[in-house]
Every structure is written in structure tokens, then in C-alpha cells.
Length: 561
Ligand code: SF4
Image (cartoon, rainbow, N blue to C red):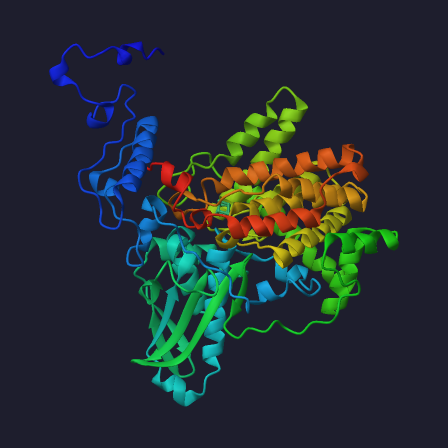
């Protein structure tokens, strides 16, 4: 389109106005800047924000009310506004060096599959499963208090800080926290219980502590300060109160992937691994020197650390594989008219994508479409708050199940090969946790979908009997091409971009395997350990707005009608 008309001198000098003075914009994109600039915002930032919002509104046909457009930046008092109206820099929380997730950088990897692959309700391992495990832990501690102390108890109180406060509403953090307080565990909770808390938020429950029964409700879970001097971005406190007296208090941290710590935490004592390793290079060297696979080294470590037999380890892995298959099946069975919970009103699309992909003329397109649909299915289950598996997190819960389902149910790959793949994938996840992070609040989406994709690439390569170097290269490649990916869930809900992002993570995992298994492996230029260093460094350097605060990116540009 020509701009020449706009360049023509105004024939009526009396009406001359610069574009900046005029509310009208030939493209209809000029920001409608309200006259009142909210306190705490400088004019430039405010105009920029209004410009983004107005442009999005014009493009989507949705508009924001004057109230929404002039809303002040989020504060600790109004955490629910964070997801859609934020302009601040987000919680800048340097990790405390005494956290175990930070300290463990120095020793060998001691994580085990039952700690790593966790079944629990979606949508987030750090904001749903972690808080639920935390309040359940506190509930158990409280039951062990002396009877005279419990006799004084009158209330339980949960305070959420940092990212848990900033985006907790969209993750159902308050419902998960309450569920743990009333004695429910993530792996066995009926998701309908959590749904009922959403549908009837005024319900009161009785928590039995000794001879005392204490009433608790969602009002006892408080969205507190989003910014402050916290040991971890996902910090929360739980208290048992006797009137004004604090009878028991514990500060906790949900450190990513459903893992939790607390103030004064010391990791459980474990047996030494048979093959101690801190890097992929060391792990792969054990495999190569012993003329075996990464998976077999991991199995030997698993058995030596936990004291479990091979059958017991396999039984646990089978449980996880079956849960992954179930989550894909359940997601695919949902009606195309199903709408996910929350303000986005996102329609379920896994079944549609699958059906239409099956009609594609070309096999390759059918494959990519099907893989995407499997990932969408499991990820939509996560969005519904149904049971998912942390691999490594809830937000990324569609990636690994997509590949597991595709290999086991479609390609009919032998189950033992899938078990081996799950162990190699776990090694990839452990190393990322050990040296970088699995928490979006610490490292953005590269730490979730990026790690999941790397794990899935290792799974596929292992399932197809690739040599250990190819397994490493595939994982490296998948991780490398997620570096820098930010986390900015719209309205704080793990749906946009998360659900489609799982599909991309799955397809990228296959791409990484395709490249790694077809290139000359020894010429692969970047090794996995180098990429994990880049992941950790990028996490540190990433602007905190992009670390699960919903204060930037899509969370700001997408307008909800
Ligand atoms: S954007 Fe990525 S990291 Fe953030 S919530 Fe979604 S899946 Fe998780």
C-alpha cells in the first residue's frame, strides 16, 4: 500500500497536526492512550504498553475496557492482575546458595526415577504438584506435634510468594495447596476433588490433627508478595496457628519438576551409585568402556542407589509408561467441543488434529500430525488439571508421552526398548536438573519444554538402538534448539503457548533424532554438557519478566475477549 497520500502536505494548515497529536491512525493501530497514567508507571512505558495492547486489540478484533487499559502494574495486593496487565520486571530472585538444587551441582547425580517421574494433577509441577506435596508434608508434620500443642490449634495458613503468587491463580496453586492440607497426595488425588474446589470455592473442610478438628478453606491460602528477598522464586510458608500464636511454621520451596525443599533441608541419605557421574561425558564413557548402553548404566545406578531389583525398577517404569499412554488416550477421547478451564476459553483440538492428520495424503505429514496430536492430547489433559506425569514438568507433560505413545502403540516398538529409553531420558533430565534447572521460574520454557524435548530425543534414539554418542547428540540437538525460550503463559494458565509448545517439543525431538542418527556422529560439533552450561547461563541471564511471571511476551500481547 502506498503511503504517498499521507506524505502530501496538508492543504489546510489550520488543521495541521502531527501523527502523535492525532488519535486517528490510517492503519487503525495507533494506541489509544488514556489521559490518566497510573501511578508508578512512567509515561513512555505506559504508552508502549498501550500501543501493544491496542495493536493486539485491532488485530484480534477484541478491545480492552478503559479499566483494563489503565490498570496499574501488579502489586502484592493484586496478584490476580499479574498475568494480563503486568509491566514490571517480575520477581528478581537470585537462588540461595544453600538450596540443595544449587549445592548438588558439585556431587555426582543421585536422582532416581521414582523421584523424577511423578504422577500428579496438572497443570504445573512447580505450581500445582510441588505446593500440594508441600502442604501434605506440613500436614504430616503437624499430626506429629504433641497433644498439648495441638489442643491450642485454631487455624492453618498458607502464604504464596514470588512466582507462586504471580501466576498461581492460573495454575490452581491455591486449590492444590488446600488439597495437600486436607491430606490428599498428588499421585492419588481424584482430579474431580480439585475441580470441585474450582466450581465451589466456598467449601470448608475439617482437618483432623490429634483430637482437634480445624476448619480450612481456600481463604486460608493467601496470594502474598510477588517480589521480595526469597531463597527461591517459588517460595511458600505454611503455619499452624493457635490464635495469634504460631505453633508450627515451615518455609518451603517448590524447586521445579515437583521437587520440594524447605528451610534447613538436607537431602535423604542414599547409597552410592555404581557408576558415579556428573556429566554426560562421564556417563557415556562408562557405557562405551563397558560395551553397553547409557540405559544399562542408569539401571545399574538405579539399583545401587535405591537397593531395588531390576524387576522393581522395571515395574515402576512400566507404571509411568502406562500412565503416559493413558494420558494420551484420555486426551484424544475428548470432544472437539470441550473447552479447557480458565479465561482463555481454549477449545480442545487433539482429536481434530489427529483425525485430519490421518487423512493427509503423505505419510510424513501423517506422522508429524499424529505426533503433534498425541502431544496436544496429553498437554490438554494437563490444562484440564487431570493426572499427568512430570517428564520433567507439568507444562511439558505432552512431550514424552507423545513419543512413548507413538513408539509403543503405533510403531509397536518392544516395551523393553521403551523402558531403556525412559532411563536414558531420565539421565538427560537429571543432568539438566543437576547443572541448570527444570523450573520455568528460574530459567523460562527452555528448562521445561527444552529439557522434555531433549529427553524425548534420547528416548527415541535409545529405543532404536542408537549408539551412546547418537543418543547424546540427539539430546544435545533438541536442547540446543530450545535455548532462550521464554515462559509467558497467557493469563497465567498453562495452555497458551504451552499446549502447542509440547507438540513442537515432540516434533523437534524427532527431528533431533533424525539428524543425529543420519549425520556422522563423531562430527557433531557441540556436546550435551556444553549445551547444559548454556542452558544454565541463559537461565541466569534471562530477563526475569520471561520466567513464569506472565508479565511479558504473549501474556501481554494476547487480548482475551
Ligand atoms: S510457557 Fe513453557 S515453561 Fe511456561 S508454563 Fe508454559 S510450558 Fe511451562
